[in-house]
Image 1 (cartoon, helix red, strand yellow):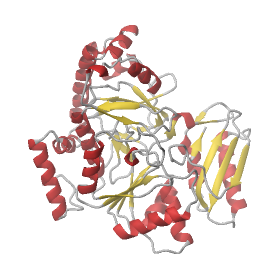
Image 2 (tube, one colour):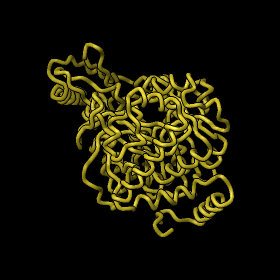
Image 3 (spheres, one colour):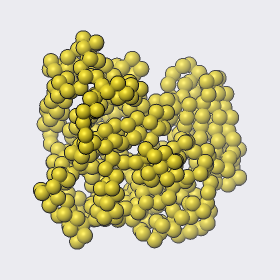
Image 4 (tube, one colour):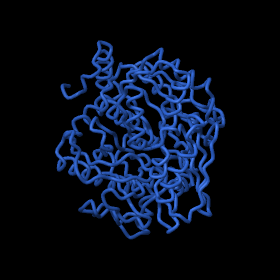
Length: 470
C-alpha cells in the first residue's frame, strides 16, 4: 500500500482501511478490492491502459448483444455488430443514445429488467430537463463507490479523515426532504449513509432550499458548521463558494482554512486562484454524473481531469457525431464498461467539454479532459450562428472581483439578459462596461445585452444555481 497517499494518515484511517479490507475479503462489500485495483491501473503504461479498455469494451459488446434486446435490435437496425470490431475507431459506427431513447427503452422493458431482482436505482438531478434513472446491482454499486474513492484519494484525502459536503436541495442524499420528490434517493441508501458517516466522517451542510440565493442566515449556518468541524476536505457546488467568501468578507469574520476542496463546476483561472488564496485551500474537480460515477478526476497538477479509461470510454463529438480535435469543445459521449444490468453504450450525457492531447506531468498516463464546459442545452449562440460553451460566458463574469454570483440567460431571439449580485454599489458602471465589451467580442456586436444588478439569483427547481442558461 505504499502507493497510497500519506498526506492524512491517522490511526483512525488505518483502522477504517483495515476494516474495509476485511469486508472485501469476507463479504460482498468488495469496494476496497476494486479500489486497490483502480489505484494500480492509474499507473499502468498507456499501452497497457489502452489494451485493458479494449478488452473490457469487447467483453461489454459481447455480453450486451447476448442479453440486452434493446441494443441488439438497435445495432441490427443500423446494420452493425460490435462483436466484430477490431479497433477503437470502429465505435464511430455505433449509434449514439441519450436519456430520451433510453427512457423509452426502459418503459418497453428493452433491458429485461422485469426479470431481474435485487437491484436499486439512481436518478439524475434533472438539470437537463429529464430525470433519468439507472439501475445498479450491489456488485456494480461497489465498483462505483471504488471509483469515487479513487477520485478522493487523488487529492490526498483518505478514509477516516474528516470531510463535509454542501450540495443542492435536490441532491439524492436528502431523500426528497426539500423537493417533496419521493424518488430523490441514492441506491443502497442506508449502507451508503453509514459509510459516509463512519468512514468518511462526513458532515452534511443544509443547502439553500428556498427559491433563490441571498439568505444570509443559511450562509451563516454554513460558516458556523465549517468553522466548528474544520474538515480536511470540503465538497461543494460552484456557486456556494463565492457566496460563502462574500459573506465572510461582509461580516469581517475569521477566514476558514480548508486543506482540500472539491468544486463541482468550472471557474475561470482568476477566480480559482482567488478562492484558493482566500480559503487557504487546494481546489480539485471531478466529473461524476449520478449515473456514471468516476468518469474523470483531477490530480495535484491541476491541468484538467484524468479520464478513467479503465472504467469508461469517453468521446467528444460535434453535432454530427464526429470526433472533435484537442481543445475543441464537443458533446460528451460515454460508454460505461461496468454496468451490465443496463449498459450505457455511447451515451450522450448532455454536457459539453474538451480534451488535451499531451499527457499530465504527474506521471499518470490516463488522457486528460478539461474542466466541464457546461450543459449542452445551455450553449449560447453567436450572431454568426456559432456555439459558445457556458464556461466561456461564465469566465467573463467570474473574472470580475466585484461580482459575487450571477445568471446569464439567452432567449430564442439571441438576446442576453444578465442578473448580477455585486459585492457593493461602487464601481458597478465600470465593471458592467468591461463585461459588456468582452461579451460583445465573444458573441458579436449584434446580440442585444442587458446587465441588471440583483439582490439574489433564482435557483433551478432542483436547487442548483445555473450561471449560464439558454
